[in-house]
Image (cartoon, rainbow, N blue to C red):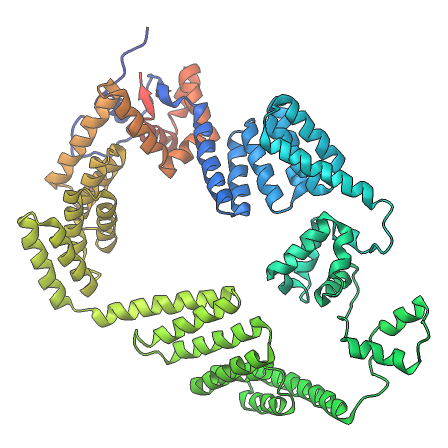
Length: 627
């Protein structure tokens, strides 16, 4: 026969050994002989499962949005909480396959089948992973096993068709057809993308959709590489994958001219290969070419000298070197952007802006690297920020940073954009600041509040905060308006801001506690009222708030609330990070088990004040009941 649960007041007296009620509402802890249990709808074993479902939902949402790395992280979190849930491994396998991590996808697919061998979708994941790795025969076997379990599954049918087509292509490709390229197989495996991303000469290609499509086509069918060998990017990629430098093929006139001099004799293959390799100096170089090469070499020397001077903060010397480099070689905008950087350091912002504009203009004409153009725009935006004296002056800088990000999404540029927007907002507030007008707007809001015209009152309180954002009374008043309008989350934010601005202002605690009470977060409201009493021990409104919270918590422990209301309170409590941390703490889970199964061990736990505080938190939230 179950013992009747203690009321909260009784439990408090037994725990704290203090009379009820008194002005000392901060409960102290003392061991007791009663037992605790989780509420029936929140059994201990179900808690990780509930949190796993939440992580799974986040993973599904991230997967749908194409954020596969995020989805993998969420599914991994869920697996830690529910390691025997086969669906989680299946979902993570799909996420791994989406970013071509087929080995990881295969491991998760195998785990899915191990946990649930009669689930057809597991074999679909297995087949997709095998197909991604290039194991077409094993993919066929996996899809066929899945169809044996669920013959009408369209996804398995489509997968089987793709796998059989891959087997057919493989059989046709061995032996390689005449004219087939030996380079195709180097594109197999996920390490291809790692190599291309690591090499500066090919990293930019990964942002070009047509290049990605080209590589993926070769991965599906290595013999298709022949169709892309005329693309200079492909020759560069082959060089990177073979770990040697390879220059792009020159135009047709350059490659044909040596053959025309030797007549129509067909060269030997080995000789042709050697002739196709670029040499340091052509056999015949015009005077104009020699002069251009010499000028470029001298310009590079001037640039290096400028860099050295810049590092030594010898800015005038650096400018001279960069200027000479610009005169020697007008085909490289790095000299201009470097000089702009020097002007920026010297505080010559107008000169910096002129150089950045020139760099962008020349860069467009020369089809320069988009990263170089983004760099010039970023430096211009930085100079504009330095010149800004009002909030309006930041608008051109913000616009320039946004343009730079369209050229190249660089973290440094993004940070500068955020800084510019923040500085603009702060200046706007400073320019708008007027305490006198703020007081007038607050009084207008008070009058409208008395007339129960709450939406209009909110408008005037908002205007008062724009004029003086540091007035805690206005936040308190607007929180009261939001409470009347039922906008509890907005009211809670205002009450918390009020307390942040003036921790000794008791109205902030009464506003916050009232809102939490209306949200049925009685445990949080109780803590808020108790915190307020520390600053104003005789405040009647705070003491009344505590009594109301205790009454509501008593009802929960007596079972005087409906199952629906209890379930709603528990669901809300489970969203509280503090409650989640308590319930997932291995020590606390053992404590809860001991309270139900080992009373002697429970007595030892009660000697720990931290454990007692966490138990009281669970009791107040309705998660744990006293019996």
